[in-house]
Amino acid sequence: MVVSCLERGSDFARQVRLRCAGLRVVVALTTVGLAVFTLTGRAQDAPSSVPNVVRPVGTVKAITNNAVTLATDAGATLNVLIQDSTRMVRTAPGQKDLQGATPLGLAELQVGDRMLVRGKPSDDGKSVLALSVIVIKRTDIAAKQEREREDWQKRGIGGLVKVVDPGNGSVTVTVSAFGASKTVDVHYSKDTMIRRYAPDSVRFDDAKAGTVDQIKPGDQLRARGNRSADGAELSAEEIVSGAFRNIAGTVISTDPTNHLITVNDLATKKPATLKVNDDSQLRSLPPMVARRIALRLRGGTPQPGENGSAHPGAPAAEQPAETRPAGGGGGRQGGAPDFQQMLGRMPAVTLGDLQKGSAVMIVATEGTAASPSTAITLLTGVEPVLTASPDSGQAAMLLSPWNLSGAGGEAALGTNP
Image (cartoon, one colour):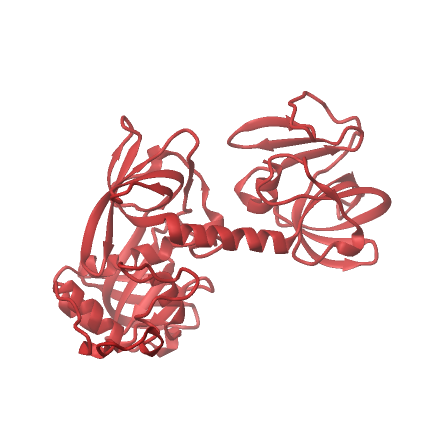
């Protein structure tokens, strides 16, 4: 739990105490209440013996001699003073207590590391005299996120929610790719981690702890777990869901200065204005890939040498990068390629590159009354796709698996789904 607090930052209300005498760690989380752990994992009720103690959590931004600049998850900047008597330990991501934690020297601390500090605040509240510090190294977090990202690719599915059945503990998801679709029953239990995307954020890291009650038909959902032999069922270890907008249409106007784009939504026949920010992915679909998707939507299968596909007998190295499986699990043998990795290889575009009348497909946040939708993924060069599909919503749904793939910091998959 203490590690989850350090890793997820603002997802949890952080109240953490490390007691030097006995090294007791207390973690108060908004969703699970109060849990007290010793290094051996025994639960105890142990109030702190040191009055006027604060427990900030954040990311190391700078280190000068024995002073550490900490950007806290609450949005403040603190100067943390490390004393010779300060107890510093390093723990690994995913640990629920400090069993296995190792001593850490100040010289080993690096910018980007996550820190949980227990100490005495100054009168002005701008600095803290550290009594004890728990550290998770940024390299350890990055390695864990990469492992999770690969696991999402291997054991994850993504699609649109069709049915929610609390009685059977399952959610039926329609998984679509290249016009073909199938349903998968995602089974959950009390041990399944359920998260929900924020209505005004495109970041996986901003997803909050959620409940099954929040999942509705039409939502996008990604689940990770063990699949049945026929692929029709999945026992979920983790579920992340959100209400997103799928938009297919043509550009009416762009406003690069204010980071806005207005699109004529082909489904509603109405203009839709969306924000674009640094987390938005704007890509151009290569013509060859657009033609292949269009052919699939019409129910056809590309033949060797057709529409730019490889000639008979051509080795994988000679196939176009967009059609051959990517290394490191990027492709799926006997199935559709990994679209998230394909998307990452497509040419990036800017709002200034988009012309009036350009066809686009967009996945965006739901938005709120106070904030318009934000584009998660915008794809241009999709004229063949929209021409091939009479249902513009079906065409836009092709992006659905892309926005939720990955986990832990990926826009998807941060990371993180």
